[in-house]
Image (cartoon, rainbow, N blue to C red; front, top):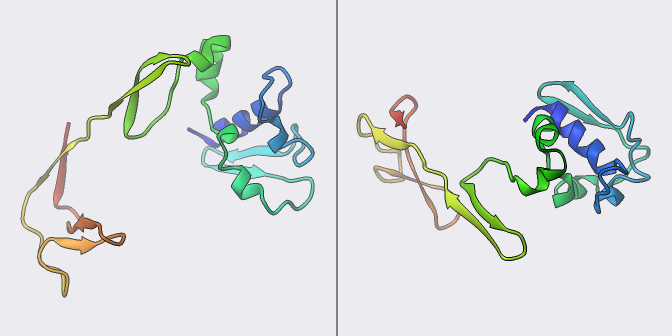
Length: 147
């Protein structure tokens, strides 16, 4: 995903040809021609017509999902029938309105090459993460990933 994909996706939401039910999130708040700019591959600028405090929350809505321009171009009108994405699950099967089946993405195996030193006051192997959750303590450079 690049900043250009973000700009493309937001313009696409506002495009009448897409007929997105989420066009309201930007209508009257952003100029579709100048409001979305990719400054480089990793920097995106959103320029509002006027200050609009809830914009950060709106950007987290499903309507603002980022899609790769080249995938939309490839599938055309069948784009919505060909889910894409990244994360802990991968698409397996979809019968619209009936079932969506995702499979767990295989994680790389982690092998410790040596035992990490104990952390002061925390015990030998665990650093407390979020309340009630433990995170393995691994010093830099001691993990090898195998696929």
